[in-house]
Length: 223
Image (cartoon, rainbow, N blue to C red):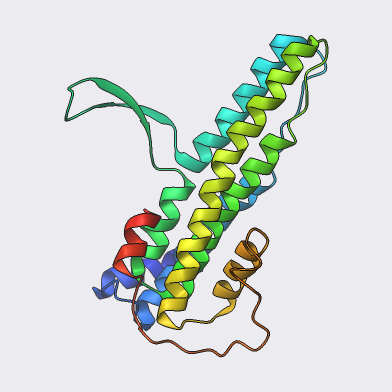
């Protein structure tokens, strides 16, 4: 409740989303309010139903995967393509977008990097969940092989996106000379993928070269 009151006070006070003290507190409030949704997602498992076999169980697992995607990227909605005039399905409004729009938009370096970290961690978790998806029983050898290959390809798309997001956010922090707890966690996360390029820093100093926001180039890529 207190975090909601913080946001109301920020809006009532007419403060700007400029990375200042008020904006930083508001960014934290938004971040904290999103934690329950984040926690539920990060605890989601793909659970096979024993009553279903083969293709039917596979279809049920697919529904569970789609439900996770709905949380991360938002549900599918129909939208008219401005260039072609055709109706297409797009996703939006999920946690991934909300972390940018509702947290990073306040230009608080501390909480912007926290938002970028959580965005990447959601994608990582989803990828690992896909890799570990249960294999339905009664599949033919060829079906099982194709199933596992699809899981690997599908999961790697999200893991690669997570790695890219981590890299962009960390490079942004390095360019500004920003070192804080969230940036340290970003470095630890990307270090697992590219230890030679992003070694862990033992004696990092806390300093901020640019007090506000995220670099325009990084902001564009992180959207």
